[in-house]
Length: 450
Image (tube, rainbow, N blue to C red; front, top):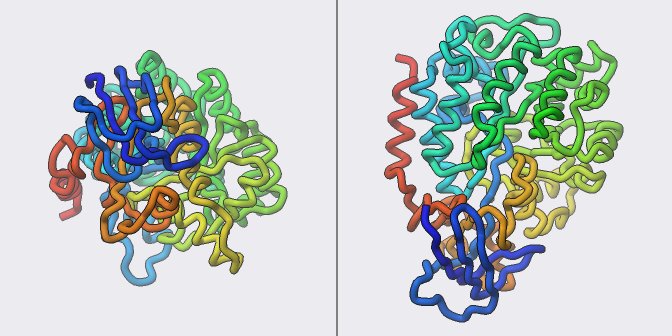
């Protein structure tokens, strides 16, 4: 990592405008100076063509699900069938193969303009739930993978204790559990202490779901987040059947159960939040809980389209995630928020391009514990993502329409340059690690069942 100067043909600057001729100087991992109105690149500056955005944040990922792409989409397979395939992949991973798969998956994210990932991590232990010699070996593998790929990582270590409400873990799921939340917290405290001085790693907590973390265990997870001032994420109200089972058992929705047990709040992100009552929306907004929507996964698994605009207007900042990594393209996730609401309401114009870019950058970064990222301003993390405006998808864009063109027309393939924390990780559309497709193919074939 070295100090460099970049000249942006167009840069997306706060509060949401494309500005021509922006000179950006980087010192170490941070922006040192941002100058507008520089008509031509100085001799020493790296020229960034197209529209340059702040780094995008993927607020919800399961890296190992990348191995399922193309393997679990055929016919009318149910969600439970998909989940069994996912468990089969989980059952074949160890720290070494997980490192290879996650490194390649995170490199694919970097190619898509993602500079920070929230990895929702529950594959903790070995076969049958046996602890590795280092109980956090799988977490270390994920952190190493993100660093190799050039991403900041927020490792959201999930407390996962039951298969369903009232049902013990069984089979592959035994690898996910720690027995109870106190033993979970002891293990995660050790992990967090190891990275306490690392700027590029945040260790947060997660209530996996109301299904997998009994309510009486939730306050321990919440207390970990408060004590560490760390992000706390939870998957909630993803499926109607989940809500029905929760109401039958607790006489409350998942969001209400989380609220009653101290999980919601400004450092918390509720992932999916697809099927919400008016009370749920009020509880999320009133507690300033972030909501992370993952449209490509939610439509892939036939989960539905959530009320993102309603929760935003109620007070919940909205972020984006790739979840199962059936597709890694945060621009697609962004536009799907608006397009999904058009389908459910019959009206257009719920989200502007500026709204959606904020969700993909500064809001997502904040939800992962990086409130000083997602802006191109002095002192912020030096993340720059440059998107072509001359591809077949984006050609014809002018400066006034650049944001709309990128959000509603561009794809991850249009990202040609990525600077992450001052480090150039994507140059001319290629990752510095080399052929990411070959990396993915090798990592996936190593764990594919015979």
